[in-house]
Length: 197
View 1: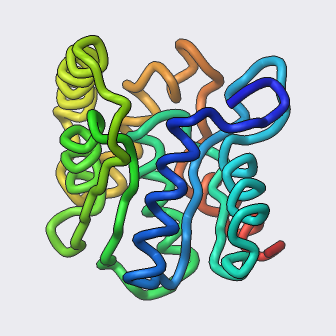
View 2: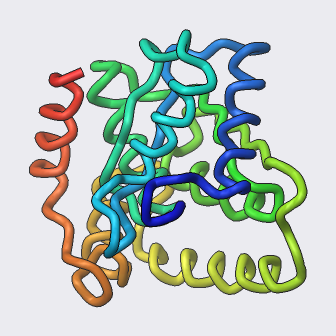
């Protein structure tokens, strides 16, 4: 997105794909993920996406939930799982329709399957028209980095996954961006955020 919070064509295409899918297969919740990643803008990308949806599709307002912690796809999966666990207390398996870009589908599928485990059903759809050779090469590198980062975690085991995220992932362990809090503190932050809806 721009420094004014305007979404680029790729993000708009992802949202449009999500809304189109929702019109065919309605969801209980439309979960928008992403932090305020731009140093020149205080708007979280989750909120920028929400503004876009409300401007285009105001009837979806009651379905939208924003998760403003994640900094990448792995974080999207981890914090989405925590957020959904707080929204749907007592439910441990989910049916998710995840929307991304076409070149990003394979990696997204593997990450979400790993984080949510075998008890959940994850379907990943890609908005078409944004991939090129460079993005494919980057996806291969990123998938290998994901596998290395979480090599000591177990699929579906949120505690081991969260520890690997907090200790090994450079976007979350303090190496590149500020270190995240432990899972209980993060869950509490998400619970408070949801209570204000």
